[in-house]
Image 1 (cartoon, rainbow, N blue to C red):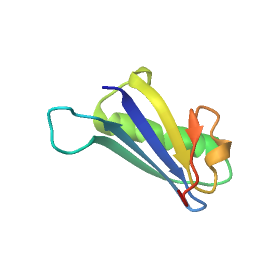
Image 2: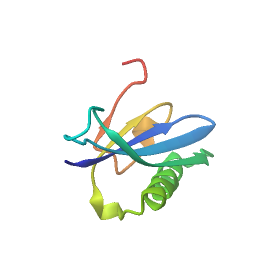
Image 3: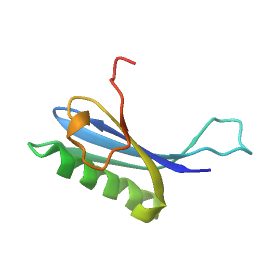
Image 4: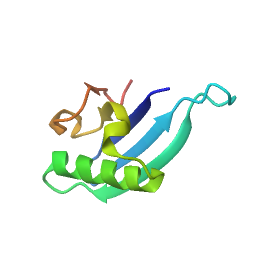
Length: 89
């Protein structure tokens, strides 16, 4: 199943998680890695750094990520996103 990154770009912190659906498990998705950084003024850089930490946590390469979804205050500032989702949804 595809490896998906979810990135929450908050005004204080940017968080990233890596998820992969596991068809054999009862849970809808498995958390593989996570990353947390202070957002600062450059949301794109913060998102990239948080994603890099999540990838390191999961022992995976960036090329393994097939889809990136962003949410939060800076969701439109992430240049490598595939979709942005309002946190109200």
